[in-house]
Length: 432
Image (cartoon, rainbow, N blue to C red; front, side, top):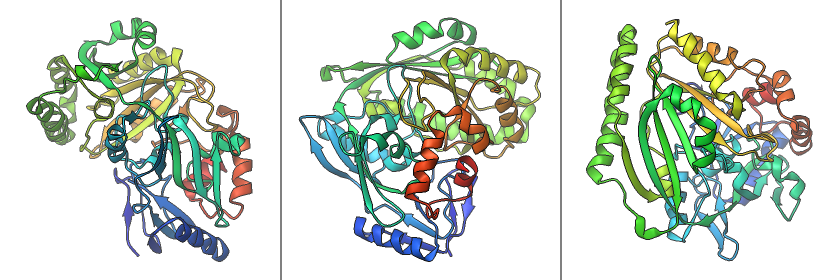
């Protein structure tokens, strides 16, 4: 048995068997035989979820050979992509074909199937998460059937299978509604927390993509405004030296060293945060969308993220600031705040409502439990929905009321996987 661990080290397991599937028929045969023999099967991508959503028990399936662009419809901009394609590979592949995804998250290490299945999203009031960009999904079900769902073929199931948590089957390919490739004009600048919150609605509505990072124990934030640009002659990326300095040395190497140091002397964290926040400087550049959306992150951390109604974001941040202000906990990692449009994916955190996302982080060498539980208590009564791949303590009984199509999803799961070939302890907890 080989041990499997996720990226953050929050989950490990020792599956009885590891299978690198050759192609879809091989996967169909594996699922059919496993279902007949009572074995559980779990496809694993990059392992970037902090939760145990991808934890394998009996059979770990690797999808590395099911990777790359399968077909492109240039008339519609729709692209079929194999499930095992990493996002950092997909971006350049689409760009080379004159296309791009409408929006992306801030990390691109995940596979496309893993990203959509866990509800990965970016930021921008006019844009949905990644699952909302899908117009088709192919997946292998527990009996070995290859089920094809598109907005033309079994369209009533698209809202479920495009964000299926890995509970309905193993996704083999997705169809993405792409757009012509575009640039993003990025402006990153320091600001005050109060002024940012006071003008938040106006800023979010005006910007194509807006997010900010608040430094705990300070009144400072780093704001990021990304504006879509179609004129490719305006391409003006960061100089190589500046990108290496900011994104490799300062944001990763130095940040990791600082976190290790303050983990041994946590009382220094507020002062270090003040120093870091005041050292923030403005930068401005224009580059291809996939290069701007995502950033490299090598510092290992724990994360919890919840979606709340957009209007509730200032309330939650004020509560978080008050709690941290009492020094009940000291935190070095910034709090990330993003926004997304409503969508119709059944288990999407943005189902049926415009959403604000608040993500809290803790360095890997520090205990995160007290901080995260305090954050979760601040969400009571807000109908908050957890990112499926990030830490939370909710179960099916508490999640049911937060998702109008929850019972419909569970019923579909009962139909497609009655023997629970694709389950694990996490899915049993959140789905029942």
